[in-house]
Image (spheres, rainbow, N blue to C red):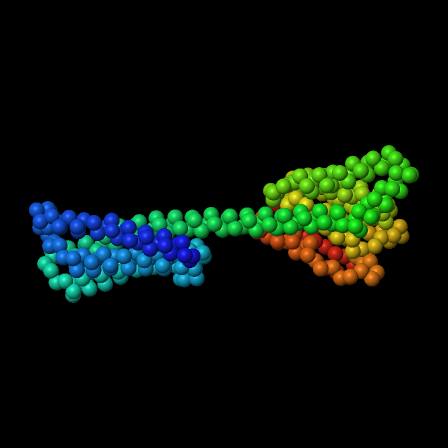
Length: 339
C-alpha cells in the first residue's frame, strides 16, 4: 500500500464515520426527536466517533494491505472465505463496541437500543467501505496496466533500436554493400530487386510502431525481404523452409519476432554449398517453431543472448507467455507462442 492509498483510506474512514454518526449531532437540539432518547455528551460522542473510525480503518487495512490474509484470499479468488472473515470482523466490532460503550457510559437506553445503533452504523460503514475498497482495487489495476504498458513500450523500443543497430553496424553494411556491388556488376536488374528488399526491411523496422500483435502472414511477408537479401549473399549456402498450414497462418505474434531469429542463425553459423545453413519455420501445437542446424562459426566469441532475452521479455509483458529455447548437439530451436 503506497502513501497515496493510505491518505485515501484515512480520509475515507473519516468521512464515512462523520456521515454515519451525524444523526447524533441532532441531539444538540433539545426539542428534537433524538434528544428524547439520547442526551448529547461530547465524551460519549467522541468515543463513538473514534470507535467507528478505528473500525473503518481496520477493515480498509485488512482488505488492502499486500500479503495479508484477505489479500491472499482475494488473489486466490476464495471470495466466500473473504466475505465470511469480513462478516466476523463486523460482528466482533459491533459486540465489542457496544459492550465497551455500556461499561464507559452506562446511560439509559431502550432494550437492545445500543447494539441496534452499533449494528446500523457499522453495517452502513461496511457498505461504504466496500465501495472504497473496490475503487482502490480498480485504481491499482489501472496503475498496473499502465506500468506494464510502459515496460512493454520500453522493451519494444530497445528491440527496435537493437534491430536498427544490427542493420546499421559496419558488418551488416559491409556484407550488404559488398553483395550489392557484386550484383550491380553482374546483374543490374537483380541489384534493383536487392535495393527494393533492403528498403522494405528498413521501412518495416522504422514504420512498425507499438506492440500490437500482427498476423503470422504479415510477419512472414516482412521476413521474405530479409530472406532474399541473405540468399543473394550466401546463395546455395543458405536454405530456409517455411511450412505453415492454413490453421496457423491467421495466428498472431509480436512484430519483428522472426527476423532476429533468422539473423541470429546466419550470424552465428556458417554455411557451404555442401553443408548449407538450414532454417525451418513451422507450426506445432500452440507454438511457432524456428529451427536451424548448428554449424558454429570458427573462432567466434560466445553470444551474449541479449536479443533472445529481450524478445522473451516482450512476449512475457505483452502476451503473458514466454518463448522456449532448446539446443541440442545438432539444432538450435526457438518456440514462439502463437496466439
